[in-house]
Each structure stands twice: as structure tokens, then as C-alpha cells.
Length: 288
Image 1: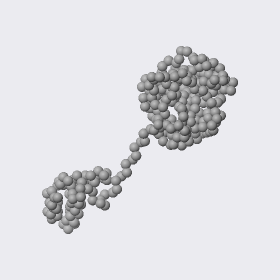
Image 2: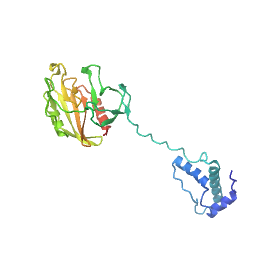
Image 3: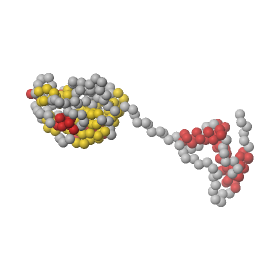
Image 4: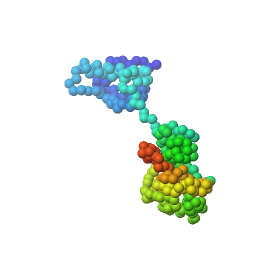
């Protein structure tokens, strides 16, 4: 063990400004204390004008005592400084979506509808309470099609049908690559009305969305649909749950690839749920 230092020598050196460097081990201990408490501490001569010699000696002795304790104990002296400032929690990483009721949090919403071998981006979203997950995220008002509420799904769209209600033949050729051709095809389907294509940026990627509302009486459509709103690369299709259902369909350019997702907004959707949907969409990050 290192022998104790003579306090008189230390005080005299301090007052004469002859010793300006702390012993290495003491310096390390004090530095650890500074780092832990995240305070800006200035080391050096503590001088005030017109200070009496007695006051100077008392202050110097206190300083040496504090440094000596740190040096001997190799750690911060108790009671010195404030408590460490709590570090903010890092942003939670997205979790995989469970099937069924979803707790509030941040989740991955994986795409559906892509053909085998396709590389499709995925989305991270933040959800409040009240949502359930299966193929899509949904906030239904009851368990029937008539009670279908909000939904959000990253469905990859490749084309549309000759008549979504009565002729489920794919329109050929399929829309050209890019945003505008697909937006135009979605906007001009029999049995629907569409709002204007609207520029949008989601998760830092630009594109457009269009809101398509079903006006046809879907009870009179073919029995195997009943109303097919779009086709996807894997051969699947999207059908609606009711007349007057609105789907807001996003078409984005993600590093030169077309990426699509949509929000189902039935006529029964409350104003509060519409506002909640906007908040969820604003939380989206897209990972190519």
C-alpha cells in the first residue's frame, strides 16, 4: 500500500501552486466520478480576491482531503456531487407482430402479395391500444364483415380487373413500372369513385396515394369475390368488405422499386379513429 502523504506538504504545495498534477491513480478515480455524474468540474487553483490566509488554508485542506479520499478509495467520495443523470431509454426496436390482440408498441409490418423471389421492403410502425393482427392490422367494430373497421396492410399490387364486381379478368398489359401508371389504373375501375392522386412522403420515400371508394352494390357481384379491388404478384387478390368502403392506396418509390400499402377506411370509421390512423401512418419507417 502507498504511504499516506503529509497534509502540510500537500497544502503548502497547493497554496504555492507548485503541484498542479494529481497522482495518476487519484486522477483516474476523480475522472470516474466526473464521468458518472456528468458534471463539468474545473480543476485548478480556487482563488478569490481579498481572501484571508486562514480561508485559503481551510479551502486547500478540504480540497486535499477530498482528493486523498478519492486516491485511497479509488472511487468517488460519498456525498460529493449530484446523483447520476438517468440516461434516456433508447428507441425501442420493432418487434414481430403477434397474431391476435396487439399491445401498444413498435412492430414490423411485413408485406404480403409478393411473388416468390421478390425482395420487398418492410415497414416499422407504432401502434396504440385496440388493434389486432392477422394478415393485416385491423381495428374492427365487431366480428362480421359489416363491422369491419380500419385496417392497414403492406400489400404489393400488380394490377386490376376488367370489372371488380362482374368480370375478374386481369387487365392487360399490367401497369408499367413506376408510380403514375398504377395510380391511374387504381383510380379508374368500374364500380368505384376515386379522389385525386395526392403526393405523399412516407418514411422518407416519395410517391402518391389515391382514395378509392366502392360505389357498386357488392351483394350483386360474383359469388367468389365479391368485389376484387386489385391483384398481387403472387396471384392473390384483395376484396372489399362493403359498399362505400374507402381504401387509401399508397404507391411509393423505394430506391427505384415500387412499394405499395393501403389503409381500409370504411364509412363507419369514427373521426377519432381516422385521426389515430394518420398518427400511425406518420410513424412509419420503411426498411428497403
